[in-house]
Image (cartoon, rainbow, N blue to C red; front, side):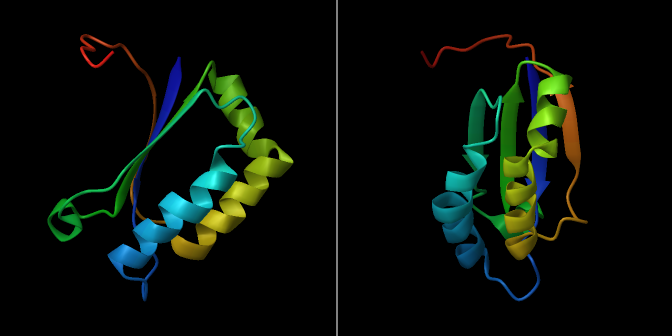
Length: 107
């Protein structure tokens, strides 16, 4: 399983609360429709000023090829166009990792 992790930074002129509301209630509905997406996790820091970012995003795909195909699709273009409306896309790192769960006592 491939996981893309993004640390998100809001666009200048947007409050953290406005960012979180739009991301969690509007953008997520579009992003959930990415083809091949297996899991979608959003996390909002309790203290964004101290954290230095406004959100933590995890997208899971079966393979890197599936991830690339998702973002090259029409829906992927729609997701990225919408993201550009509320995110500073030049800020915050993006990591593509292969996840190994060492313990999951949540299920």
